[in-house]
Length: 118
Image (tube, rainbow, N blue to C red; front, side, top):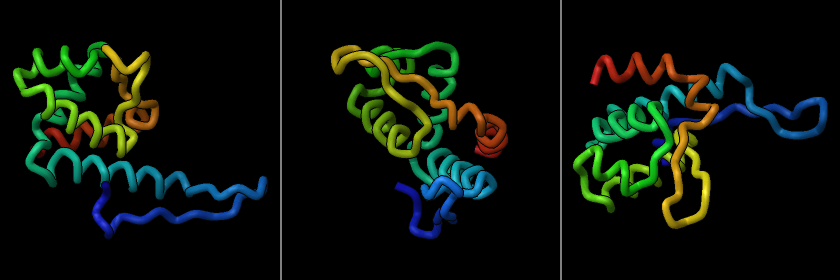
């Protein structure tokens, strides 16, 4: 969950649907990445997890083994990254693979900037 100070500005589009301004969405994802990677204790492991998923999709067990971190800890980080639209899942529950989202890919530069400071 994002800190309460993060908000999204929305506007009613021509099609009648609510849409967020692209600049606001960029700022929102950048704030979320700062929070996830620098503002919490698990940030370093989340960054390592993202780097592994950047290489190729993996399931939670593979990530736990490669990171040398407890499986439940990895699941916690994955759930947090799912909530913030950094990762998405594919496949069935058993051995479910995790992928980086397109939204994250559009903000990769912010990820690189943040991880330089962490």
